[in-house]
Image 1: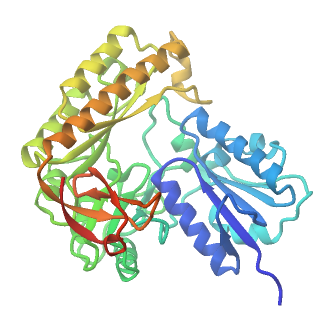
Image 2 (image 1 turned 90 degrees about the vertical axis):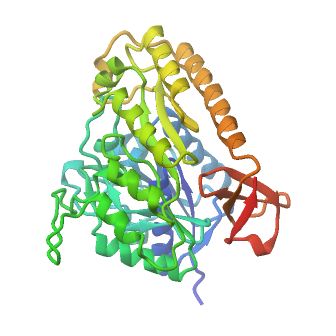
Image 3 (image 1 turned 135 degrees about the horizontal axis):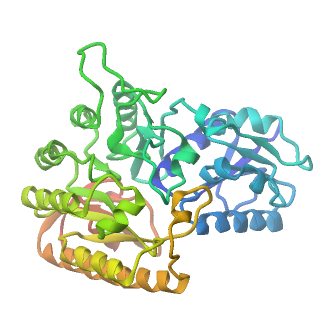
Length: 430
């Protein structure tokens, strides 16, 4: 009997990448491959890349070198955003055998069948303008929370961002398909779904990037309509909205979540800067006043809600005064934690034309200041709930005899491992 070929995956970047990696893994397993851990020996290694920061690019190169040392005869496949943006550059990394762009990643099985070690690296990519299809993805059996991709691509052109160049125009699944996937996940015992996309609030554009209307009831497909219908799916106990732009987070969405038993009191809302001058230079579609309004409404309707914020430091032209404005704005906002990104130059972005450039050491210093603020915010948010009993969904993973779970409002709980808690929702006194 012929030995099954083995494949191992590694994911860099966002929740969307995790959902796609999981789907690629299932596709190859259905194709007869046996899945291995990335640290094990495998016939094929697939790295799903991100290209939001320089670190993701460097990490990709380091991973390829690691594979070369460990298993020089194995095939190495690179896909994801970095692969779409820099296919030639990646193909020249010693050890890389195949580079799959955005349109080809879900044809991975056919590409691998034709691949042989020792040939020059093959590139299968295309102009991102021609990428228009939508391929539904979700993570399964990887973790208690499942990431369900419902939207891809972005029509925004923020001056620092390469995502539209890496993933193409905004396009979505249909509500009908999303509901079908949610029911399938419920049947597999999944308790919590995290809705993911590049620009989630822009949900409603069809695979060709054009807004669609449901023929059955003549209502336009949009994110609000999606969450209302997901709320009715039996078997799924929790939903989270992974990240949503402040200008697309409408009052009706906030009000709906506040009244829902299934959509968790947890929002992650990118801000990027607390300075309107910097927001304009970034080509963001709102001002800080709108952001403060959204936070204010959430706090009014859901005082216990967890609110996460994305923020970039060291953007070109960001003066000390601009940074202080961001710090004071975040300090005054009733938010729960920050994801702080240090600005890094990306090819073909408008931000490269903005001067003066902020010195790298200053960028890192500002990052540290905001990370300290984030730590204090999260400590304060957690302490506010001390003594309360909240519902915790515990994950199955055991590490050093301990297990983790999250409350409905995203406070992390760690406790000694108990098998009966695994993938179950437990009332927990904080």
